Image (tube, rainbow, N blue to C red; front, side, top):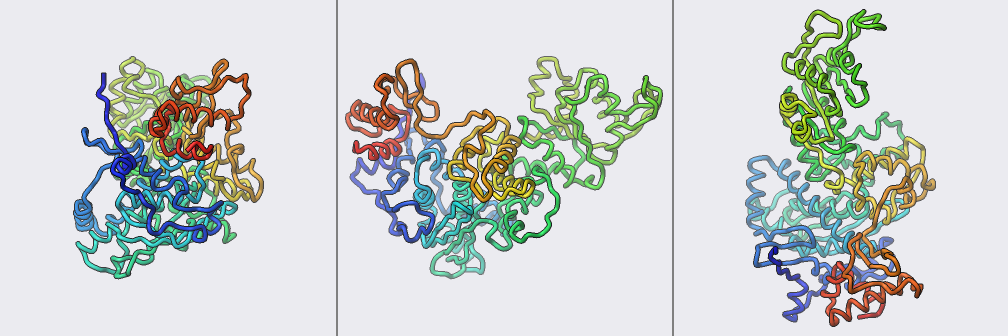
Length: 600
């Protein structure tokens, strides 16, 4: 049997020692939150500091710490400062700033996902303020809210914050002294990642005052991307590579100017900020300057053709042809003539000679999509063309030299196909010179808000539908959806919603999921089974001992939830943590619902 891991949360420690996890000295009130707040916000609004501390677990015995289901580490600020110095000295201040900004963005996005998952019903204002509490709990900075407002009708956000005790400033000043530019790079990235992921649109933060510039404290302002002038400069620090489209983040400002826009397709921009996306971009930039064969792998819809096209655009062959071939769409009897061309009279109907895709792509790039669908015969002829750099037309008698960079893509595991005998091993090794794996969208959820923002602006211009943006429910469902069709599915969902939503209105859940998609929110639901039901969280059944009353009693969902909570709390002797484990949920979520029903 596996060894049981003993975990204890920060809140458990506080209860055991009698210490208090008090609110920040600068907890915001309703006035500071402008139109952002839908009710009174106080230190008790959920998730509050105690709720959040329930998510921080320590397991001293095996050297692990968790922030809910994400592993975290305690790192000396001086060690982080040492790494910062070395990066600045070796890479330059702009490159180092970009690295820390992007790392902060990923951290903020992860925390926003935690808040959405743990407290799906939280008031938007409380969910937003939870980011300031998490930032403080993680030891980065104390956040004082000066003002924050979010307009659900327009999707515009504006907030001003003061940062106290910044750990980044301490290390930067120790290394370089007081200078002329702000130094809280990771914290700016964190704020951008957290709020953008929370609201499903790009919110850009700028540090206008900083202790590293001699100011008393750090002052930051966050606004929707379209409200800033020169947002491209901010995006250069968020994007790892220049070929990631910057204009895609600021489309709303272009529309407001009412100027003619260049004709661009929805897939023309490479949009992303997640670690997985940046890793793929890094590989792309390294191999682009060479002529090496590249093999893109990944599920259908992850953007393999877009990456192949971008590889061509940033390569020395950019001015030469880019020819794309979908191998699955060409009949086996025609694949040879399509790839290599045909001479006049080679077969009935061949009245003229014509070049194949290899000849048309000579000097440029040939993209072979769905390469695994080629027959064994076609694979052999392709292998010879790759090895020799020469092709022969069907019915021809002479070899034709071609200078082509071949880029292939597949959504199948070619190594498995080689083992099964359906794909040639020698061709696999010829194609697999530089493999680049593109992860599915569910593994790069940090990119979902940016892609949503990009697609909604594109399709509202294309279809003339002036929708304002997404509701909070729509954002929550999209961020938590598994996207079996990946980016292509997200693109289609947003286009559908833009068409179905009211002009001047917001995109809601019922505009998105109308094509039979199976989606679920991270909320408590009742699953019926014969004459009883089991309360579950995201499809996970609760303990068998805690079941819903018989359906014959015709209780409402509220009554059923209250009954289940009562039974769980009673079965646990009033211990809320034990009751939460019975229901496979968090203590904070259970305590929130128990208070709602007056059980505690």
